[in-house]
Amino acid sequence: MSDNIIILMLGISTFLGALGLWALLWGLKSGQFNDQSKFLDTARYDSEEDYKDAVMMEQKKKDAIKRKKEKEKNYMPND
Image (cartoon, rainbow, N blue to C red; front, top):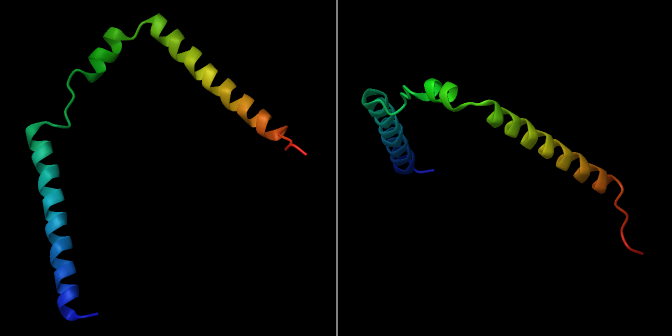
């Protein structure tokens, strides 16, 4: 490879890395990653019905995966 291509690749990768670092620092400084009400909202809006719904959906997902595995296990192609 040519030295010019290597220098160009290093320059571009350094620039992109610096841009990503700048974006991260900007996000931290401006509070983009701070969610002050996350835990309060979780406690406030988490009711027993929501918990039951979540458990029911998880059970449906497990049952669907189990049925799919059984169907694949018992699959026989047409003659």
